[in-house]
Amino acid sequence: MGRYTSQRRTDALDYIQSMLGQLRTMAEAERCDLLAYLIEMAYIETGDIIRGDRPSRVGKDQRDTASGVALEATRKVKLQ
Image (cartoon, rainbow, N blue to C red; front, side, top):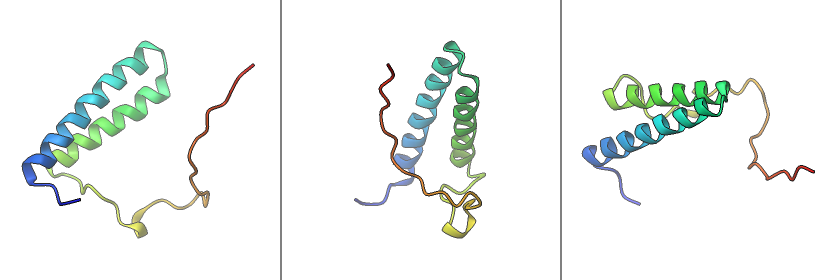
């Protein structure tokens, strides 16, 4: 997979931000306050990346590893 051109990257980030805005609206409509808040943070972060205020990647040594818990794929839970 080749590297993004600057315009293609900006277009992709604009699209991501648009989708995040729609997801935030849906989460708010369902009264999922924490989810809406987290989506809002991603929306703001995307805008920061577009403007060049933040790097788009965080180096491995910069990540928060305080929890020491490995992330695993989520599984569907069947409620009875």
